Image (cartoon, rainbow, N blue to C red; front, side):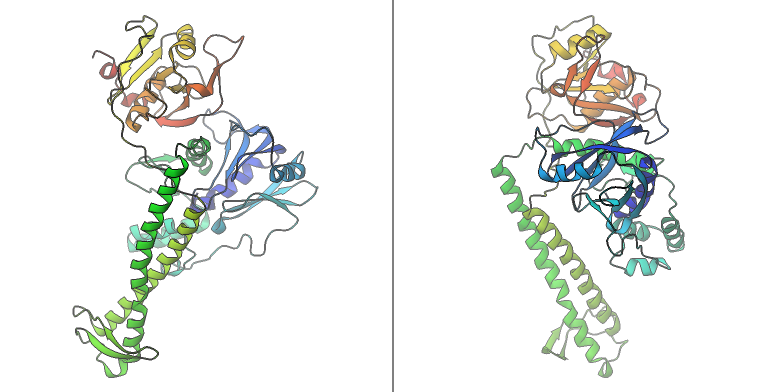
Length: 488
């Protein structure tokens, strides 16, 4: 999560959790944390499930923090870190909270016990402390956009937002940000997992949500559970990805080293300004550097002497900033923190299994624009049969979140065949159209593997329990059933 977004998420999350009492702590995987609490809380005004879990992913670049209604799967035996935190949190109440947005940290004040604060961070595992770290909560107070852009501590997303604005509008944007005012929170639709939600539009197509909590849940839930899923990469494939990324970073390092080397050119020009005409335009010069001696300086004849000097210093500063990012990414790569792979393009699905009748009065049959077979139940009995008899464990199951609706199965030929995003959204829209969310502009639809969906024994037909799922947000009206109906 971005620091600029955390500026707004911290206060909202602290207010939401005030008054809850921690029950226990789980550690689904290294760097992943689940904090269970009561009573459940509602993260927004929309009709969404009540949440009783606080999910945290500790990661320098892909960190997450959000409330959730679903508990991730956990190992049978918790490790020592989980037990340490569980001992200090069990039964304690949240009295309030303090944010430290530049460092993406949130401190929750606890009822009396061992340690006064629970410190949650994007970069370190949660810990209970008696007092907060020195400087906690200190935030920059830029008196103008130029000061913010010149400060290395300015979040990159805020820097990009300021540069996109017209000069006259930058001051207003910065003032609103520092005052904690936002006109909504935006999640890029084409690559929602790349940067996460932001308090301003990040791309031409973005989903706007009214609160930081709603944006954190919409982004965090699918990304968190997808990151917990078993990795498809074999060890050899993972090593190949690490090696290739390190090679790219080494090429970036060489390019940035050449930029930082321009510092010497700028210093040579500055040392000889007294004998040069600052407004003159000239080609390459041999100048005496105070420490390096004679230096061939590649002056740009299209710029004045002063402009050349400023350009040398500016590019050197850019190189130093870039090298810091390269070093950070090299560390992440060596630790195995690789960015998620883009889904590979897949061919259309082959004809469906013979176990599915070509004409079944209890099923709607559709064919996605990429050729994948989609099945939807007409009634509760058909929904049950679709899930328990006609679907393979690796097929995808879809259902409108939070209320009644038809079950939808997206058929796959194998566990390794990933449908394109367009097919997933078409299947989600078909599920939304036959549900209580059919009239919504952005309907929430659960997506899970059939293996993670279980019928509830003794319950009415069609009632299920979902262990792991992600949520898609789709517009039901954008999908035309007659176009996707098989044989249309």
